[in-house]
Length: 133
Image 1 (tube, rainbow, N blue to C red):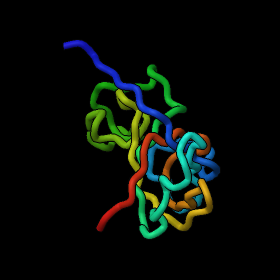
Image 2 (tube, rainbow, N blue to C red):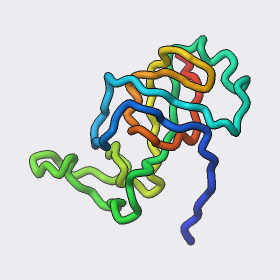
Image 3 (cartoon, one colour):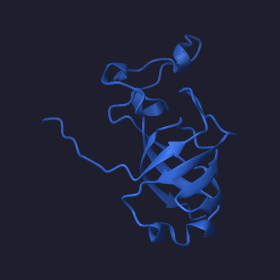
Image 4 (spheres, helix red, strand yellow):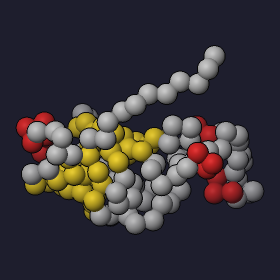
C-alpha cells in the first residue's frame, strides 16, 4: 500500500490568542476564528445559538521532520510510560491535524470569538461545526 494524501481548503484562520506552541491543552485564552472571505457570511447563520464548537485545525508551525512514529514518554519525561503517536496531543502526528472544542463567546461578522482554543495565532482552520450535547 502506498501513502495517500488529500487536499483540504482553509476555511478560517485563528487571530490572536496563544502566540507559542505548547504540547498540552492551553485553555483560558480568548481568540478569534476569522472566516475566510471566500465564504459568504450566511454560512455562519445560526451558529451563535450554540455554546461550543468542534474546530479542526492544522499544526502549521510543525514540520515533517517533527513527526514521531514511535512510542515515547509524554513531554519526554522518563518517569511516564511510553505511549504511541496517536495517544499524544501534539504536532508530531502524520497528518498534523488537531481538534479542539472551544466555547463560543459571540459572533461579530466573520469573527467567531472563542475561549479554550489551543491553537496559536495564524493557525489555519480546516473546518468547524457546532457541538450538540
